[in-house]
Amino acid sequence: MPFLSPKCQILLASSIFSLSFVTVSADTLSKTIQTENAIQKSAVKSQKHIDGLDDQTRKMLEKYRSVTRQTRTLLTYNEHLQALLDSQEIEKASFEQQLTEIETTQQEIVPLILNMQASLEQFVQLDIPFLPEERKQRVSSLKAMMTRADVTNAEKFRRIIEAYQIENDYGNTIEAYRANIELEGKISSVDFLRLGRVALYYQRLDGSETGVWNNAEKSWKPLSNEYRNSIRQGLRMARKEAAPDLLTLPIPTAKEAKQ
Image: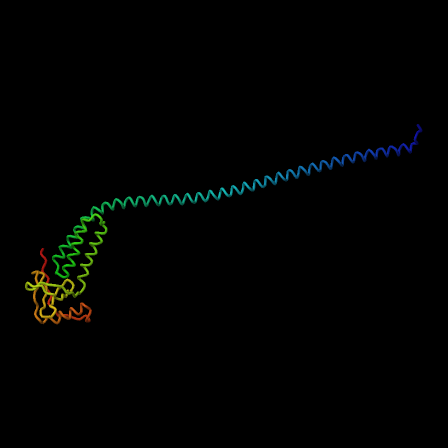
């Protein structure tokens, strides 16, 4: 084998070293690339994991906020229900008290109604005898109603008050009406003039006779003819056929009440 010159030996060694260096650099670069790819894959995987955790955290936060809102809503609703229950308890206690009072009132109102009905009946009997049939019928109807089970005490009381109001109104009005009257043992049709409860007059339809009711003696008392025109004018005024005016009429004196 021929020997190489020293210069050729140096060139050959340099070539071998360069080739070895290139081989080593290529291996290093490959490993570096592999390492970088692994790092990138790991980074991508980590990012996906982080993104997944972020989505999970966001969902948990939204769920927490939703649960918090529902909790506040339920608390508000529960407070409202509690207020309603408290109000119902107060109403219940009030109704129980009213029921107790109603029982007491029922026991007290029945004697009151009966006394008022009896007093009204007595009052009509003692009063001057105007509209006798109408008033007696009203009193009889009230008396019959007192024993009816299908009529409530409230309705009975209302009817009694209504009857009292009607009687009260009689004292503030003037009225003319036509009815029959017994005079000297005969039934005659006459015109009646009522001045409140102060006086009750009658006049025959032909104007031939005029009289006034004497409540003390419970009888009719004839009047002189000087009052005939006044009674006639009073009848016209009561029927609204003439304007209101002064009337000259005899007024029965009030009887002193017994002590």
